[in-house]
Length: 545
Image (cartoon, rainbow, N blue to C red; front, side, top):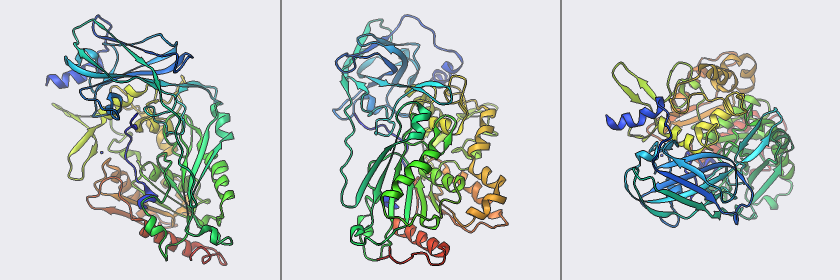
């Protein structure tokens, strides 16, 4: 199966371094689909690939083309081919889940609206796990299988080969499909002389989730690490999307060059049942990932490798998702780290959650004018051309998974930033169908995870600890408008006194997501920070060979 199309991110340490028609879209938002005779698809799964009943989600996707490595399921997306999904509970092998004209889909919202024609159609089954959490809530969600919370390629999920059909929305002929194949386990790359891997079961998260939860790290050792057994090294933690790649991939010539500062580079792996990374903080829905990273994962890394292990030599970076996580870690754990170089961070001020002001706007999907309803974009090219709309990303996520279980970007923000609902699932920041914003949830976001708000309201205590540690880099034409939130935190930091902020924020003209300084420049900035903040007698020499 092809990988799930996910928001692009910086490989930070790799570079270190997208009029009747309108009515048909809007009508279902106010008029729910009702059952009637019409097209119907039944999907079952084979007992040979999964003998036990399944609670999860069943999908079908339609496309006009299909290849061996890119079938209909792989082609689905916010701008992709039609995808339909329905939740199932305790569905037995050989039994069928029904998708019909009442089933919500995207970009075609009903099977009745799919034009007559020849299509390839493909079934898929996403298997959920029961989580009896320590907060007293029991939910069903997909358990990550070390693929990075990606239902379309997750080991154990089921699919069937694409089938060519003649489709007529006026026909009542039943279409039957079977998922008779299972996605195999992930193959983890082998360790090398310079790339090491670590995977641990988290006691903290396992207790909270009621299921085994794992954390990991990929560690890039400096050149000639084994030849300098007495050297201890600064360590750079890079946050971002789940990856099995080596941190310095793409930068090998610089990494091995003479004069390169010798540091240990680490990418952390902390997928959750909601996304390919947990956002690295404690959360009402995700659980105590911040505690687990700080108390279990980082100590495991630092006990295995020769690190200096002091705040001045423990640094942070990351891009996009990782840009937010790295900045949040510096703010939430100010004494533990010696500086952050955050690249293109997700919204650091929720007055620009991308370009939605969750505190003042009424709708995330549209600007309502007197005579016009204007689509709000979510992604652009540097020249201003729009490549995706807010409603389409969110509707695709809704088809991929209800109750914030799509594994998508907007849903993990709800799972990270928001409160827990009575049903145990995240309370949405806005209605996923209509885009109407919930101001009460927005206030919860503000008090708990709005980084600019937290810094501004707690500067008297946070300022002395982080004023010289915060650095942010972003393209001024960021594909997801993330430069706008950076400008708001920039405005605040420039006004600070007692102490005055002394870091840097850099905007690269016309640069898209995810711009940041190249690896040599970024490492040079880190070295200067360590030279300036290291205590008297600190080792600034043994790791510079």
